[in-house]
Image (cartoon, rainbow, N blue to C red; front, side, top):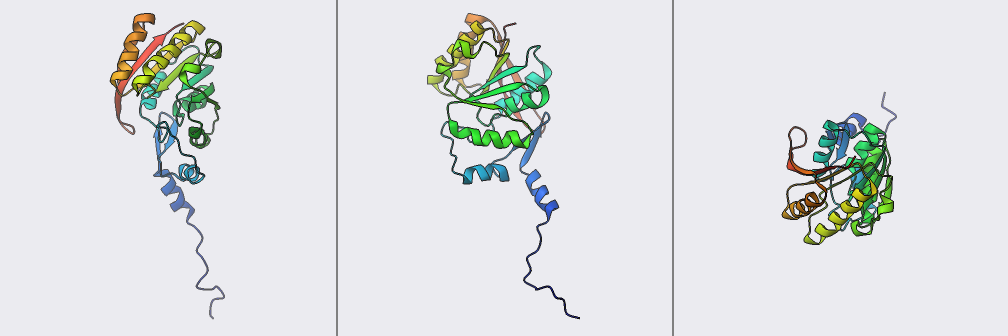
Length: 224
């Protein structure tokens, strides 16, 4: 008896295959998931026309260096966190997911936040977005912050002074822990040397292997 189904009937999508393909576009690191640019959620943001203009085009590995440091050296105070120059925001997302921190994700480029929101949704958390430049962050903005961190935020000569001044104000405001990560650009080391001369602290060499491979340095200041 001939089948009543047309040979042109479209096939149902294979959900297992779709999930497998989606999973191949994700990295897992220290309990968070990080999408590659080819992940469906990121492609959807791109199709919507969001185009970051200040290097907020991917997840930068210095963020992973900071996550690894914080996981191994959890500060006592970690309720309120500022992710300065957040980009796609994975460090703040990690704090929200693992410490239930209230996270302010700050970046000068508003176009990064749809990407951050997509990454946060994949991880089941949310953060508060703040469009701001380093030099515009005031002492009173930092008075209730427990941890300030930033990954890959001192990549131009013009950023050495603004990042350093932001750290000055964070120290004055009583921020407990400050961590700045970088793949060891000369601009980072210039900023770090000036900061340590004023406030103390140290630069740590940091290395990751495994799912995420990265090397770099962390400027760490304990202000508690």
